[in-house]
Length: 320
Image 1 (cartoon, rainbow, N blue to C red):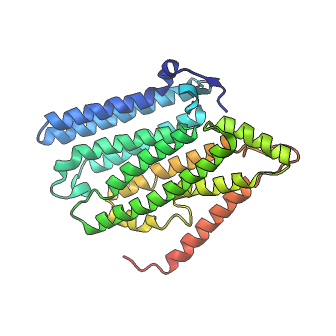
Image 2 (cartoon, one colour):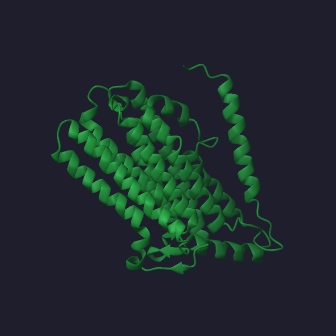
Image 3 (tube, rainbow, N blue to C red):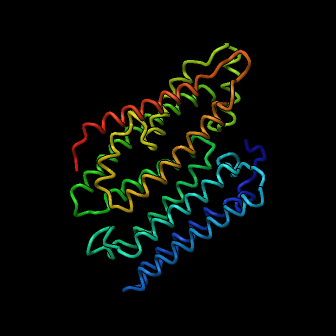
């Protein structure tokens, strides 16, 4: 677990990949406004891949140098090997999607693809930024903001084929399910904050452990908070019963968007789920010799339920 807390200014060098993505997004916006013709799409592709390559290379350099774990911006984010691996992964996945979309922009929007192609690349890099922030978050507020950044951009990308009714339907269902899951998750966070009086995952862990040891059991309010928060995390990774949006969104969204949503946001959802259980609930092991933690059982039940419901539901699926 990261232990050294850095100030805002000292955190900037370790926030380098995200700053590079922000810079690339701004360059894409300018290029989209000033360029015309075939050079426009070529420039958008080159700028996007160069930005992602540089961001991924910086994150990889942190891994190669075995950069010690740090806590950035006074406790909002973590800079550790766990985060670096996901930063490299997200950069690679996003770049791969751009490579696949570059030869045929009709995959995104049809004959009029160039009208919105600049916005597409801007949104793609913005969601990559949100994915990085999800993997780095170690504060409830940052978890919520980063997850919402990814979710809102995902809503837009799912409905990017504006003239397609299936795409519009997919985006609407995505918004409805996402809004409900987000509200339940925020409600769970409020319970956890009310119990611990802190948004920082490390501080939450210390206080939950102290309360559990004093009562010789995990407080019921923690169960309520965790179950509610699993709604938001489960929605992002398509875990049952928050998976209903997945078939419709994957069918209605543009093919490159479906490929991206099935990999990037899901990996970020797993990353934030692991960090929450490990950092906030001390799920690396038992809290103490006398207090057992049910989190592995809860995770196992969620996984088994998802696999069972998903496979049984697929048996009666008849949509082509």
